[in-house]
Image (cartoon, rainbow, N blue to C red; front, side, top):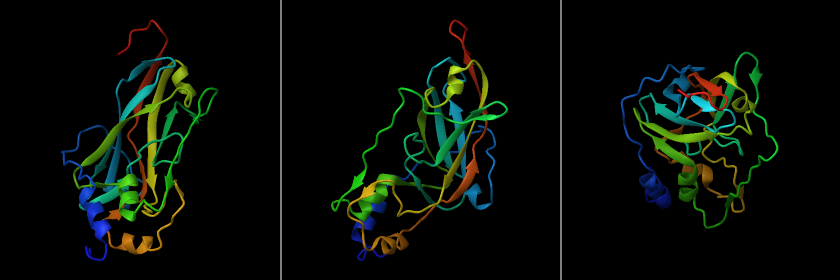
Length: 214
């Protein structure tokens, strides 16, 4: 990368947090759709496997780089209000799709201005995932979105993680597009991951009030 040609880009890459390297933990064997997608694995780890009817389900999501090269991945993992890489399923037999019920709403405010350089936009949406490392966070699955969480029983939790790997795309309203955006992307030291992978599957038990949880 030519630091003189892309001074802000060099700063951006230096500021992007390098994620820690860990030995992968055994949380099932996520399946992959193709060989290229095998460069990452996505694991779902419920904070609790038994919850009360109508309770929020908190799940730790870990994205592992099982390949040999660093990759850019999206900072956002799961967001029910906007398109995001991870989509979730709770099912038992026929799939029950997420629903938006009364009292559930979304709001977002994302606008790029002339002050937002390429470097700023890059670190806002993308992170570097080193080989052998993982990027993760705890997400909340709301019963207003998934009626299964308000229905007693055992449900299978699984998901699909996908990305087109377009470093120039954004769901922000762009008031000031960058004319040399594509050229700066070509100068990046890593590529963005693209593909589709399926997570592991775990069982979630939804119980009525008064029943002892596991």
